[in-house]
Length: 130
Image 1 (cartoon, rainbow, N blue to C red):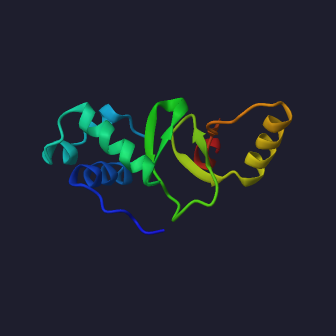
Image 2 (cartoon, helix red, strand yellow; image 1 turned 135 degrees about the vertical axis):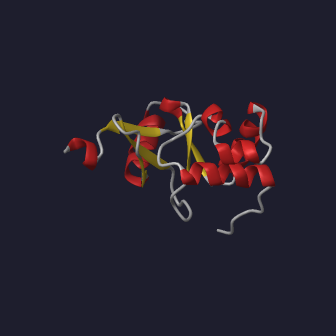
């Protein structure tokens, strides 16, 4: 999958997310010095950039944290799932093929039409568990 051409604002937001080791809200992104110094000062500008980055598959929204992370996969052949450390907020992105298949089967059996599938698992990462 080829990386799409990004606007200046999209690249600034993506760079800020890639530089951070934990998920960030749009307002946290806005507070990053490198973001402010590039002239991004309005939350709406950040949200617009995030929407396009999500659409391009370069960023993921962590629903339970109302925050965003850069995608750490080259490309997706399946929906990602996220393991979220409750202590340090580190995110581990993993595939969901078997989980997704099971959930979709159960949904079909129940007559439920799935519109979105978000899998987030909370716990402690290896470092925090020790």
